[in-house]
Image 1 (tube, rainbow over the protein chains, first blue to last red):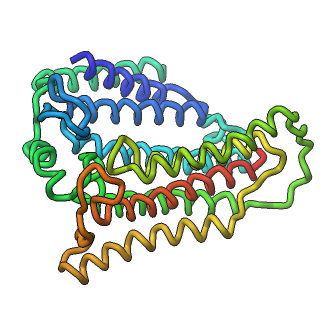
Image 2 (spheres, one colour; image 1 turned 60 degrees about the vertical axis):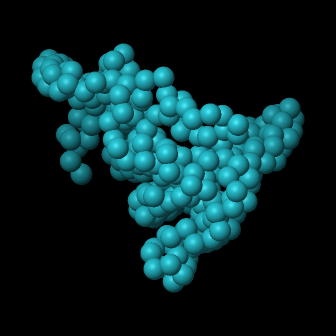
Image 3 (cartoon, each protein chain N blue to C red; image 1 turned 90 degrees about the vertical axis):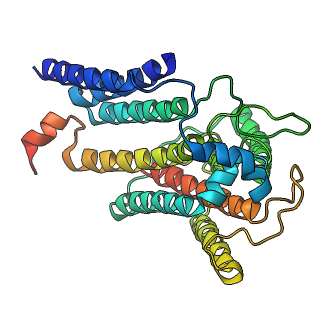
Length: 112
Length: 228
């Protein structure tokens, strides 16, 4: 249960940052924290009590293993999270070039 | 004002999620398919690492879609940053010291060897193409930061990236030709726990490793070329 609390703690921290901060870089940091929280939640949903990692090792008897499906999903989700963050950062670079600021409120004031 | 609205909104979300999460028990198996993969995975795919057999065999098509997402994200980043590339004046970069540049020249081959190990043993131990690709990218990031003016060859990593994706699709189509299913594991499974086992899984993981590695290198290359 503590895993759920930790995972959703990260999600809420990320959500709060995204709602309140005005600097675009900080918003992206919040997005990344939220991403981490969601990944952690998926992994903790797949946990089976006293289970080991779903990898067989030589000469071991039948042991209880955790659910491999969420782990497989998170494996690719992490890499995609990195790529999406890079894309968002490149958008932030372009925004800074265009407006000369990363503050979203000032960007809104300037219009063009 | 904004902060108060944020906190109120967050409190509503917290309440909703806590109420629904209290119903989910922790630590019990929730999917039947997970049990099936654990019990039958080694027999059906030959890979000892069940996560790998799920990623590349049972859900190989899903993974193809995911590396397409990765591909599109890097293409978008390259397109965004390349179109605005005006000739900027040469920046004054302090050259790296002897210790730093020698150290990164020393570490770079070790990191690449470790990445190759991780990629090749994806079906036997924790690791695989995605993780190994990230290690390759970190090796290149080290040279970008430490070595003086070392740049990856753009045409070469574009070529590696495209051929990685092509190998994945070709292996899938070969499964369609030989067995009638896209991404069918048509090669002999071999004995579990040996390096040459699990049929098409190591081939696809090598392709994914090269693809992910070169894509992340292209991300780093585009970001470093940018001076805000």
